[in-house]
Image 1 (tube, rainbow, N blue to C red):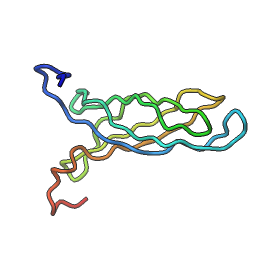
Image 2: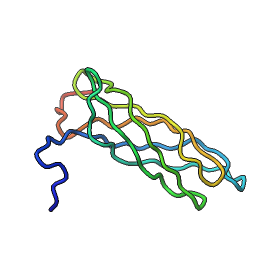
Image 3: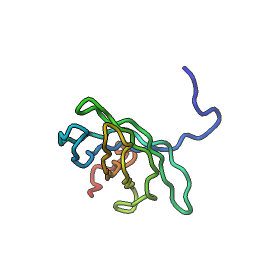
Image 4: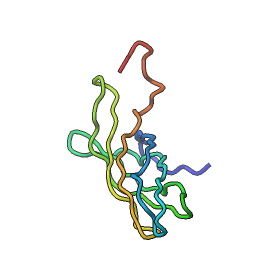
Length: 118
């Protein structure tokens, strides 16, 4: 098995899922796409951190788009766990582009205490 980060501490990442805004494609068909993926590892940003995202989104109406960007710094929930926001515009394909807005899931939800409620 290949080790991707020799002698480097691997940091956390986040899952995310969302949908893009509905728009009309080059043939006038209104449609949307689903977004799902995992962020890159954390990148220090002042007293916080951010994550890079660069993925293809699902195929709809015989085409797909890419999204790429950097999340906002961590938004803490209940003082311990955190999420990130990301918004932007997809690549221009099939005569159009879509706006998107997503929130990541909390990092490592398996470490949540059972009595810890959001």
